[in-house]
Length: 148
Image (cartoon, rainbow, N blue to C red; front, side, top):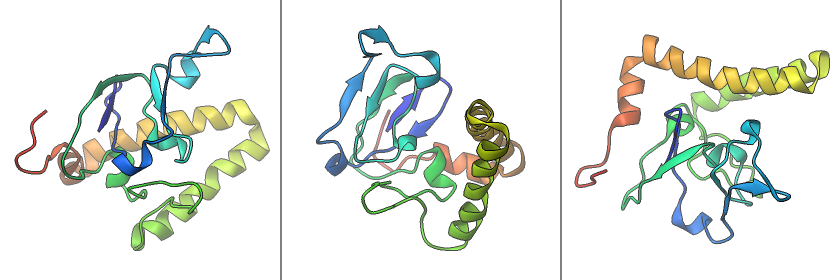
């Protein structure tokens, strides 16, 4: 499990780590704040599988969902297979939500789109903590026998 400085968590399956690399800089300069270094980059996975501002790695013997996986994002997130969302009612919700940022980008431009994507995740986290405490608590649960 990757743990970010802002509390974000995201698991990555061992099978998906073969081409991963640790990123501290890009083109001989430290990663810009917007790109969130240090981080582990997984070239075959969607970007949400790479925690920005990585501060801790937790090796686990069993799968446990991270922030987005708890909300219905796919547990693996392989780009080649278009693994964005898990099946079920959350898939429909995510398809509707996924269309909205594209509208922001087309209407207001790239900078507004980046802001919406970054603050949207933070806002969603706040909503989960306040209005769906059972879901927030599920994010903290660990399979039995696993210590941090």
